[in-house]
Length: 430
Image (cartoon, rainbow, N blue to C red; front, side, top):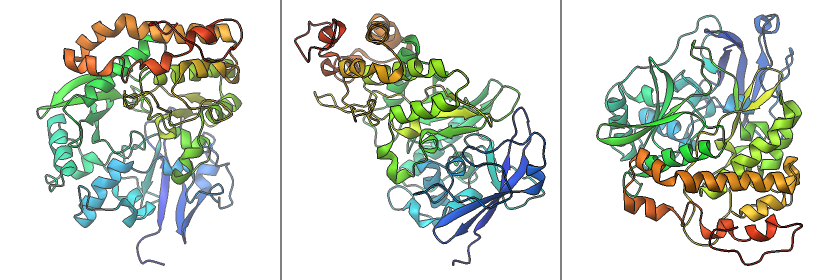
C-alpha cells in the first residue's frame, strides 16, 4: 500500500440546494474503491441515493468489472483535466506524461470543485473548502494552449483548467462562470488542422437543434486570438444549484475499458426504466442517432451522453458534443451500436430498419429522418454564415462529412412499404 492518501470525503448538493453536505467516504482497497454513506447523510430527510448506490450503512462495492462507482468516477477530471493535474504534480505535459501514473484519489484531491454534476471530494468531513480559481477567458485560452503544446503553465492558472467535468474527452477546455451562467469553454487544439474545429462543432450543434434534437445552448467567441465555443452547462441552474448527472457509461455500469460494449438500446432500456416520461425516450434517442449519422458525428461514445438524476428518475440531458468528425470516404460506423444486433453503420436507412427498437413504426421513423435531412439542407447556408465558415470550409464538410452520400443510400427503398433490401436511390437520397 502506498503512503499516499487513499481516502476522501464525498460531498453532494441535494436537489435545490446551493451548498453541499457531506455524503460519505470513498477509500481505496488495493485496485478497487469502496464507498459508505455517512450517518448524518442517511438521517437527512432530504438525502437522495447516488445513482446505483442504494442508501444504507454498509460499505458498497462498485459493480462487477469496475474499480470505482460510476457516480463517483463521473466527478473525476476527464482526460484533459487529468493532463493538467499530471503537469502540475509531475512536470510532465504535452505527450510526455501518462495519466495512469496517478491514482483516482489523487485526481479527486487535486481537481477543481467545479465538477460535472453535484459531487465534490474533500479531505474533511466537517468543513467544505471549494477549490476554484477565477480567470478570464483570454487567460484560460492562453493557458490551455501552453499545456497543449507542452509548455509550462502560467502561474496560478492550472487550477482553473482542472474543471472536473468528465464529458468531452481530451480537447482543451475550461469552466467559466459569468453573469449569464456557467459554461464549458472549448478551444481548438494544436493538433487540429486549422482553427475551424470549434466552428464545425458550433455548426453541428445548431443544425441538430433545428432538426429537433434537444441540444445545449452554445455560442462562438474568440479568446487570445483563438476560436472558442461556449457550451452552457446543463448540470447547473440559474440559482447556483448543482444537478446530479451521470454519464452513459455509468448508466450502463461499464468501466472505461469496456466502453465499446455500450449501445443506444442499452441506454434506451435504462432511461425507459427510470424516466419520468418513458414514452418519449425512444423518439428522443432515435432523433439524436439520426442527427449524429446525418451530421457525421461518429464520436458518439457513451461519455458523450448523460442523464440528470433526482434520486428516483433519469432524464436524458441535452446533447452537448456533436462534431462532424467522420472520415469523408464511403465507410463509417457510429461509436455506439444503435441496433440490438450490433448495427452501427452510419446509414439512415439501416437506422430506420431498426426503428421498432425505439417504439417507432416505419412511418414515424421516416418522418424523423426526413425532418433531420431537411433541417440540414434547408438551413445549411444560413448556419454556415452564422458560425463564420468560409466557402471552402463549408464545401469540405457538405457531402463528405455532413450528409455523406453513403448515409442516405437506400432511403428510397426503406421508405416504401416493407423492406426490400438496398436499392438505387436518386441524388437526394430519397
